[in-house]
Image: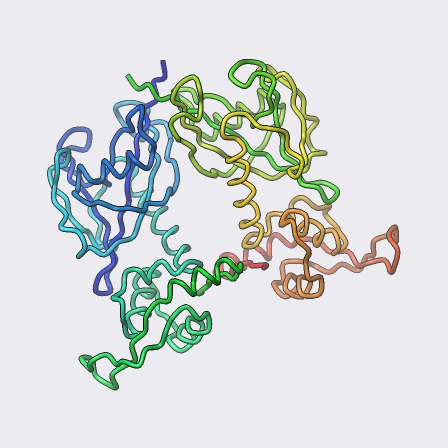
Length: 225
Length: 225
């Protein structure tokens, strides 16, 4: 009989107000009791991996999420002090305000943490976080994943801030705007944002998902660097 | 006790003479006895995943390989008719002539197959192959992985043929050459290939790995589309 246990962990990123968060749970049981960790747990024998990770996430945080992407499988011997555990990690990106996260059955506490101010994490979860963050940043440059996180109609600055936050770097605004608009998946609306910030009120934009899908079908690839 | 078994599979691509191959083994035991499959097998309890996949590859094919990259974990219930088996797949790219592949302990036969003329494969290995091929093609556009497969000094046409073969499409030769040379990781030598083909003998090139690594450190990304 196999002595390797199969687990799954979820890295759920949340973007809001120019901050990038990740959902963590405080462990109720040893090992690492009382420490923060990624939500996750063991895969049941008759359960697909994606079903397992969604279930664990729901049970531990109350977050229901439709789409998680497989990140990587972490399997170093010794990563769990109890026994051999191999974990298939999945990640996703959501709007924190869409979820009232709450500690559910298995975890003592759950919270959103700014990825720049993480507490010490249980197991090899720091390494998993780093891998996930790298993948999220790479993905942002070749898929317009961030657009789902903005309001339906948004000033261009919101998109800039999203990229700047997730990529954690300054963005050449003019160049970014030119590149993004050239790609043709944003509709420039005839509406203006109310001038809350200083300066002229900016035009509002919306993401044209249909156009994006049509371009993809033609093999035209999105890319922002 | 966990009833999920953990396995690993290897997709070893081989490039030679404008053909892309993959190493397959003929199964000696049921299920799928007598059918072709990717080399692979179960992970031992005290063994890292990468150690396991290299061991299985060695045992089944005689191929020793230093670097394999994790591709994806395939874990659908029912993918193995015997019981629940989750497989972590790894892939790599080699020169077939570097290995005299031979059936070793666990497999009845081993051979290189042209990826365009694959036999029916056991388990979900067709799906795994498709995923691997997609990843290999994507990778070729953002890492100069193919260069390791050419002779130390090569005519530019060899590089073109490699890209054209792996990407399975015609390449705009002038554009490809311009882009590749502009990136500055090839040294144009003062030597010429002997004119075996019709036409003028072409200059020879070599891959400047040091320059490539220096560019990477500066954050300059390789890209060929």
